[in-house]
Length: 146
Image (cartoon, rainbow, N blue to C red; front, side):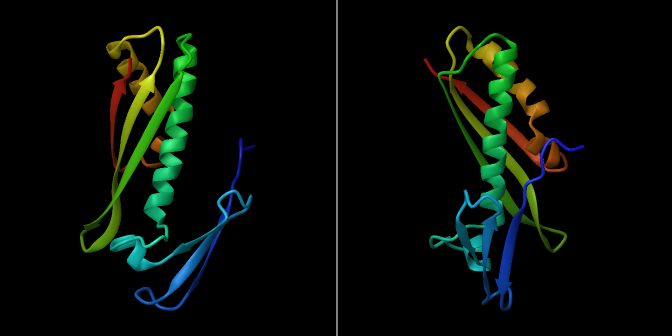
C-alpha cells in the first residue's frame, strides 16, 4: 500500500500557442493556477508552469529530506532555505526537463560546513522527488550560515 497518493488536475482549452489552462490540486491548497505555453517559455506574467510546479515540489521535498537527515545526526535546523531551479531545454528537438539545481542555505547549530555538506549529500539520496528526477542532472549546492 502506498504511503500517499496526491492528485492535481489541469483543464486546457485551445491550441498550444494560443490556449490556456488551469491547474488545481485536489486539496485546494494551491488554489487554481493559470498556465500557458507563453508563461512556460517566455515571461510568466503571473501564470505558472510545470517546471515551476516541479521546482516547488523538489524544493519542498528536499527540505523535508534534509530535515530528516539532520535529525538522524541529532541536529535540529533553525532554518533551511531550499531553492530548486528546474530547466526546460530542447533535447533531440523535443522540450525536455533536463535538470534541477538545488541551492540550500542552512542555519544548523552544532555542526560545521563539512559535516553539513555530508548530511546534505545524504538528503540528496533520500529525497523522493530527487529519486523521481533520477534521469535528470540534479545538482546540490549548500551553505551553512552562522
